[in-house]
Image (tube, rainbow, N blue to C red):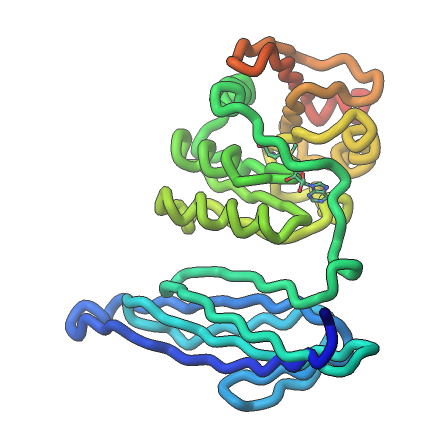
Length: 266
Ligand SMILES: C[S@@+](CC[C@H](N)C(=O)[O-])C[C@H]1O[C@@H](n2cnc3c(N)ncnc32)[C@H](O)[C@@H]1O
């Protein structure tokens, strides 16, 4: 499948300008491309040198409209180079990711995607007593329903992190659908590489007991006053500060809350 893989990247902007309004409303389009070593990458016919596994392209600020980016590249493989072409329909302000690495080189997830029922999302945000001053981080954000609901219902900033690019795309689409791009940011990250010591005031988790325990060293560095909420799973043998049960069509969901101080053993 990776035979004759040529990847040429062309960038074409098909603008639908609205002349008067367009002059004072301009935003960039960002496209991240994940590459395997040796890939030849071309933008608007110009070859870009390989500079590591991720390249990020930011367009100039663009007036409102529909744009099409045609992306092509040359990817090496034991069978010879292969050509891949992508066409992306975007709007100014969009953030898109394309993963051109062979499947075996893409990150794998530690736990499969399963969304928290919306009723539980609403309940856990109430339990956390979110305010507009909070910064909510959802580790393994799936379709982004937790950061999107936090921003939509409480006006706070929120960030979501997921290792799976399809989930990252879903989350970004979700934030965009609700017009929350200013409050919600989504990144493709392995949650075990995140520095939790400065920004988050609320961390939400719907993972596995073993992953909660593995995250503990990071969670113990949360700022004073921060809270950690876990759907369904405990945190090692640490007694939660609060606990609720939410009834849903799918059954009962336990939701646990720990203060950062409790996790630190203070
Ligand atoms: C059970 S889902 C929860 C989704 C969302 N938080 C919710 O409550 O609806 C777990 C998510 O964690 C992501 N995930 C698994 N391992 C990860 C890792 N090491 N780093 C980042 N995300 C990860 C999966 O891709 C999946 O979307």
